[in-house]
Length: 257
Image (cartoon, rainbow, N blue to C red; front, side, top):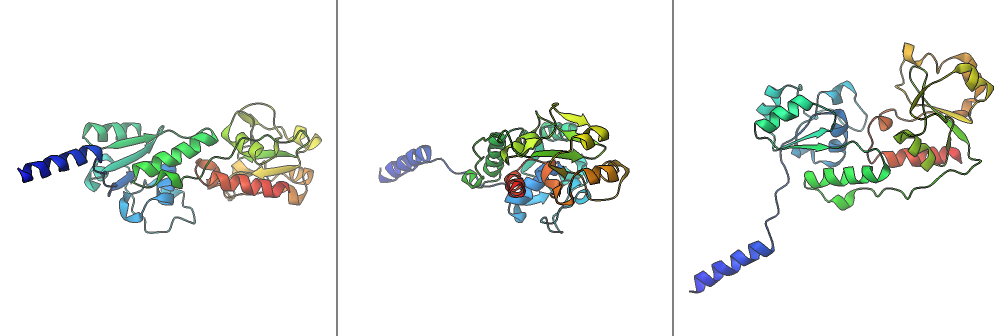
């Protein structure tokens, strides 16, 4: 009788306090943005492999030695992952094949607002068995002053970034006004910029010689903005929204001062 009561009490306790699922021990990433957020938060011992993209686009804070796969179904299956992470636009066929084989695949939507960046980080932490409270809180929305300095976010191939973009939100949150008025990605006109130059130019492109960078190197454009008005940041921070987005905002705000 006593054993029966003990068993009943144990069963009740299990119902009240369900067992906590163990954190995944063999995580596989299928794309670059997932590589970075995973390497930022996960215990390396949890990660069976990052995507092959992280070797093509290395960043300094991800040390050499992280395992990677070659992007094929055969190799991912060979790793026997207990969690596969992918971005919403990446590896569509691969992730569906993995699902059909019974593997757990979680797809995280790429953030387009600051609140979504925080939610994205919280979701990742929850999936890998971390504490979602470790996610950096999104800043309260703010707008630049009407007389704030104007910043041109210049990309490769003479493309500028206008309103209606995530990058625009970063500029305004940092206290700058966007030099451009047209929404989205804008083809730039050199004569127009020279006739009405911005207060500063942030060249958000890879730092290597390429034909795509010729516009930014044009001597007329270089003379239109003082040397201390040419700003640069680590290019990778613009490629994938994440907790490093807040570092970008702080850096841009410091330059404004």
